[in-house]
Length: 338
Image 1 (cartoon, rainbow, N blue to C red):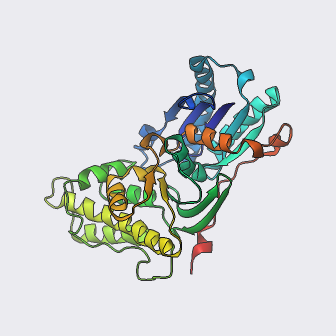
Image 2: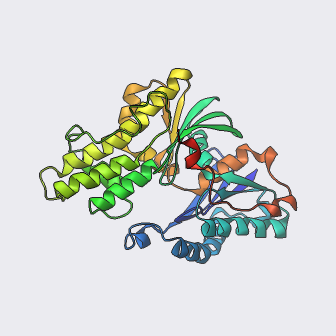
Image 3: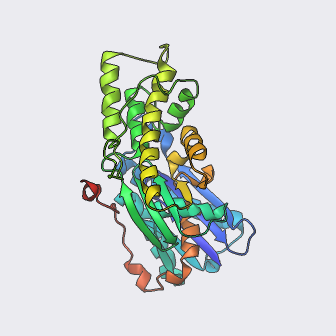
């Protein structure tokens, strides 16, 4: 089976071809990132993102077919992200999938790209169900019980900012370019994480499994107002390490609560899964923990093609698939309050 994956949920235009008979499965993935554009703005600008997706998606698609020596007729299934994300970018990917289906009558499987983040573990590891999925990205932070590739139950969530969002907003306060997570991770390696104890969100509530990161960011702002700090300051590395530690410990403490109810293997995915301190903390405290390979952690079409392939039996046939729509939301964080 040849599967085309399409991912356009935010600031990456990514296309991938998966061949189920190939040893590595993923034949080729092409991704155009808009990150450099947003350094000027300090974050993603939806209108700019939409225009860039429209500009790049068809040339990338043509290039993908050419470099894999495949034709459109050979595509057996299309997997496309349809939620959650920025509506304009999502519609760009969904409309490409529908256009191909309209021409070739190709079935489509609509993908929740958050679930694709953790299911990407199957591209490199042999993991059995059920497992506990930890999704840590720029827009969402979730704990899920994964019973199969199409049975994924959300157990808990952040009630405000996501972990990746906390890194980026904290980075902005520290004067770092967007995205800031990787830079904070780098500076933290030479710092003392116990220099300042920033709050661990909702840590005093031992029954609440949800996370909160907004208070950590507010505490950093308050500290900087009283103690102006920059990269030349002697405490710079310690400050970065302490801020990072608060984010990591917030996730760690809530994960421990969930595991008290049911011991399951842990799979960690999403952009924040690349963080070295997170990996060190989890690997030293949990026996059965697996991390999605870094190349599949950020938004990419390989994970979309993978989840579509694993759900091929549930794909929508033509013409029913033409009714697929995009949605910017997946869960309402407010529903996890209290």
